[in-house]
Length: 259
Image (cartoon, rainbow, N blue to C red; front, side, top):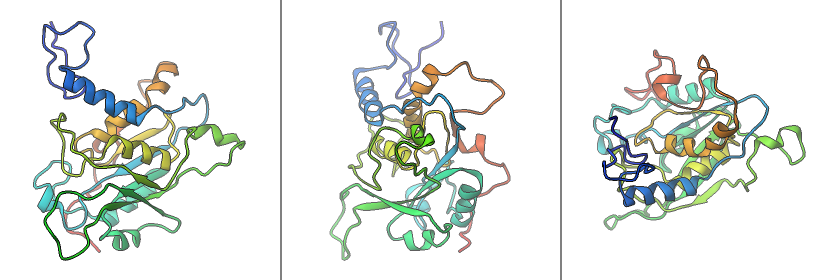
């Protein structure tokens, strides 16, 4: 008999659990419910051309060695010039997280028209510092759809108010065995999807999956489209993807920063 896998922590579901159980414990069931409920679902799209969307949450400049060591998604400082070039060339809309300290440097690499949104996550535990403690992080984004109600493409936008600022605390997902420092909460993920005007029919790539939380959020967001769409063509690339599946293998974003 094939072992059942928990839909949250990816561990085995005990043999004595109910046959319809999708998680291994009450703790995982509650964590999964909180996460997916916060993300919510997108409005299904019956027509229109799907867009290619991407989100990048690399180690912030100068912090890779301190926080991530040899994590396979990072492996050293990220060449942000190459990263921005890839985002703008390969995707219809994109979002890039960075630090407040690095914002001027990274924004200078972005094309004209790029916008800056703010995530206010509050103060993290820390020792007394000589300088003000940063309580927010910028998200640079481009290619977001701006459609007035009543225009033909208005159906692509979720029936939600889209704002360029989010107030949401950052808390560690203690039930997630793949959690990493800086993993983004469910509310942040949905906010980014809304910033970009995402619909469940779009193709989404997380360039630095880390804990996998953003892809988990996209799966929840896109669930309604899968439920109402005809069977997928197996020869087409759809849905949430990891960096290796969607990017040219010759693109190397790690190594010495070039700016």
